[in-house]
Amino acid sequence: MTYAIYATAALAEIAGCFAFWAWWRLEKSPLWLLPGVVSLVAFAWLLALVEANAAGRAYAAYGGIYIAASLCWLWLAEGIRPDRWDLIGATICILGASIILLAPRSA
Image 1 (tube, rainbow, N blue to C red):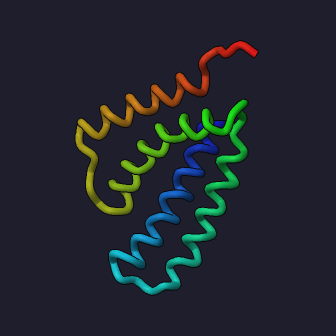
Image 2 (image 1 turned 60 degrees about the vertical axis):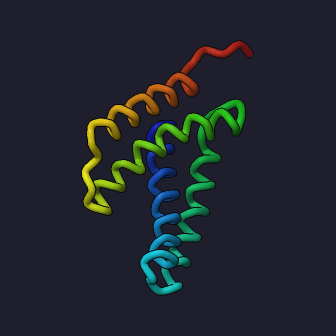
């Protein structure tokens, strides 16, 4: 379930940041900022749902998932297909996130 929460949080964060990008860099209407702010609030709420004993650890693990989700956004929303180096890097990041999340820890 944690990976699903992370994936949904990543989508919310990327969409929120893209709304700001669209307004600022693509000269879209300032109305783009409204759903962007809602999306970023949803991102923060979703990330707080992750079962972790420390916020920093949850955020660190999320970073790997965010990188992979950003490459999906690159492909699906921007029409730029990730190359093999993107995919190799994302795989390493997901492995790192999994180690952070799933490693046995002493109490």
